[in-house]
Length: 503
Image (cartoon, rainbow, N blue to C red; front, side, top):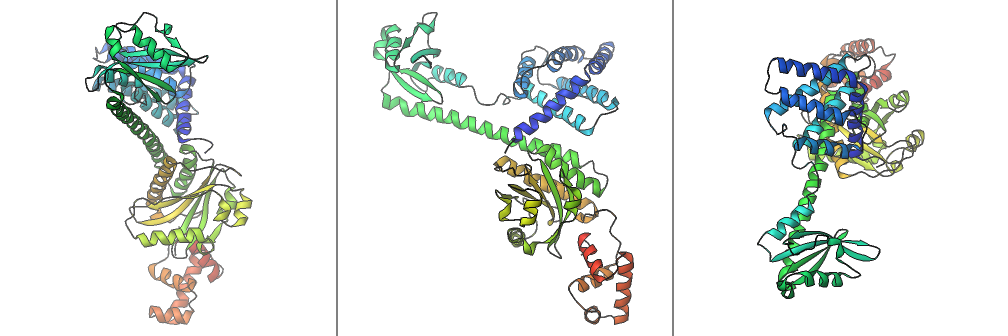
């Protein structure tokens, strides 16, 4: 994709920093006011709160490097400070600091929900940077080699990390028993790894004559392992140890990647749960897919299982009127029809309903829509309510006009989870049957039965016979339906009923 999920969430962190810097003076004044209150009350957290103000004032209000580097610097500074160790007191300090920022932002005339959410996300990441053991990312290879050289599991005397410059090899760093080394290790240099190994062995005490050096390439560097054992005895253990180190790094990276899409879901859920009406929910869902995932446009559609058709609800960064005018039967969309049939075969009580990814939208959507909206690659996110085991609709997502993209595994998972959250919110309003502009008319159960039969093509006589009613009664029901739905004829009533999810 043009933007990764990490970049999208980093942009929200940057928004949080920008909000704080925009209110620099007011926030500092509010923090100092709370600090004085704590000191007056002789609160146990007063000293830590004052130290926190000093640290954050230097870190937050100064222009710095990228978000990742900035957070790491904050975390390093926090962990090295004597007042800051994980405790209920420090959690209280963090909460007090963040609440003060929210108070200032709330008092601003132009504050938005996004401002508060960006601040909240920023403080959560600051806390994680300060106290999480895994925030720094990949395990430290230097620490690993130091432990390996110090352990007795392998007969390793020392390990040398090499550097290469101007065609020559140099010793960059040593690990293990290095008391015999000269002060300046850069004096060890040679044109080949073999020559450099001979230099190192020659500098060792007499025991060096009984040692050998095993070179092992690792990523973009080379390590030299000094041992008194034969290569065939030591090499398998060294390779296994490095493989375990690599596996640990991959596990941490996967954990970090999983945390990204989990963060995105939390932000999205808070965004859409604010909805007070169905229309708000529709708008928040469409905008939320773009706000918290690396997409540029979103079109939201409702699905009618009775008629096997979909119709447009809302377009975010799209022509909304054009989206609302879309009404298509899935019988004309073979790929989507096959997908819906597969869902039906899987039965009820499904939790995870995967999205559809099309590298080329023309392979699965009508040419008129592909041309009209300049679709290239797209993702169709099912809007599914697990609690009701029902497909409510779908969100069509892309990177903008004519923009191709690939779908990574973390985005795939996030899109699926977003669809679940959106489905539950829509289900809360009208049983998941979205309205477009006006509320759907209230029809009695019998009127809905009559309308369904009429939609299936039944005549008045056939409907009366199937419902065990007289033709006159059925005609009265049809008249009442037309009046309630403000429809001129039966066809218009059927179209409105399908559009409003009544049948």
